[in-house]
Length: 442
Image (cartoon, rainbow, N blue to C red):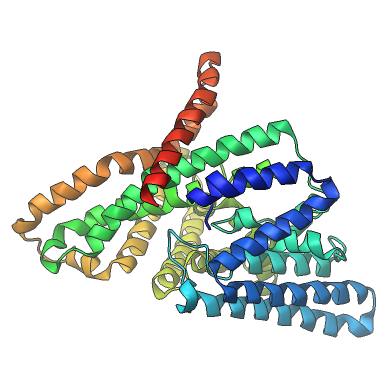
């Protein structure tokens, strides 16, 4: 079961929300835990087993780490216990990411199977580090901890939630009409982005990959914007569905980031892809690595590389992560050396770096077509290229507007009452289209 499937939208969500709303606040973590187990079981028994074992390890280790605080003779044991658990969660994630058993292999548009999506290990690591630092107490209520660790709205693509920010929310989630309304709207928008745009772009991507070698010469450059738009709109759609469902459950999850078209900082530009993930890496990886290496830019580069592997554990994304990390360091060096650059020029320079990174990522995904751009392109593929352009131009343009900066900027600027009054109508129309789409493609 996925956040974008018919059984989730038509059957599970209405029934679950009805029961969830009737439960007292302290009983809701048990309902969330039940939903977590249901989603994990649907992904495969190995994912469920991995979750239970990791959960128990984190639960008892967290209590031990908390109880050993303030005891100097236990300081080394406390540290080793934290390190052992972090290594365990990373190892389990790597195992599932590289395994094709039981449908657990991760793909761009179906990330709901790998150790349930790398969100679980990040949640467990967040919990143990927050307890180790003394930012919060260890949990003794297993249900509230299990509800947080495998939070089912996050299983598709996030948002990743830091434990210290949501510890009180998972004790007794509170529902409000405003959160419910906002969550429903956000979920519908995310579902439309995913179904109506990313599915069409995925069809073009698959057609390019499966095209005969003789037709690939002119398609390499088309693949770059298609790949970028597919990645961006898929991620935005999944994040909106996850955040929307979390809001329905009473959790005030922050947006995945405001997008500034002329953002001069490459680090912030990269963070816009998934702001909750970026905030997680900043708190638990970038800052500690900066202290360890005594170099903030190197620490940021390592975090960017690690974040790339979170999206997909493969050689292509490793190369992309290394390239992105190197670009962050080079971009920061240029900013430090030439401090009088106008903001617009600075933003365009950042966009040029982003374009290069997108090209690296795209051509790592499609090496045969990527190599073709350095050679000659035969004239026989002109009709095929025009066919691909016709297939992708509408979803590509819509995806770049929605997942880029233009639409959010327009929404922030326009405050007319008549446009606000149209929002519920648009929501209903989108919901009708979404249901029609998924019921016709099941």
